[in-house]
View 1 (spheres, helix red, strand yellow):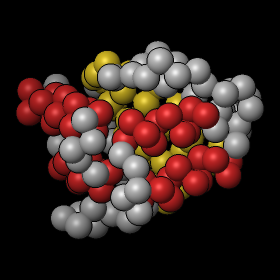
View 2 (spheres, rainbow, N blue to C red):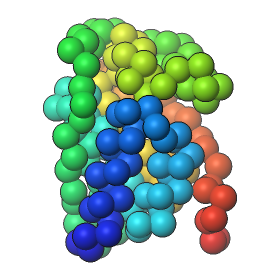
View 3 (cartoon, rainbow, N blue to C red):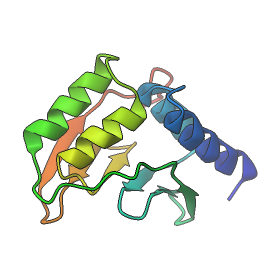
View 4 (cartoon, one colour):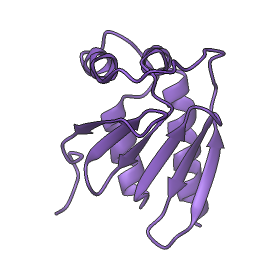
Length: 137
């Protein structure tokens, strides 16, 4: 894996944890670095980045000592997504809210332009998002 891609993954993870970068900017940077998708595992406290050629890179998260609710609340996840989209909360608050809504992790599928949030029993909330501004179809 190219060091530039690893550096981008590391910076996106750290800047997200610090609330210094927006989700659209993360999508733009990771897409430009060639990342196909990433998985945030809230139980293992890590972000896993996947390249189209099968290479994988893992970044540890700055995690919260919050328990993840047993029951999944689609409405709770949706409310957290809407709040961060409106700029009312930052990433760490977003994580707290989705964990309180029973979300154990999520995938961001850059090429498919969607995020999939899931619960312990397979429940899922899917959020579509637009292509990054510099995206070439």
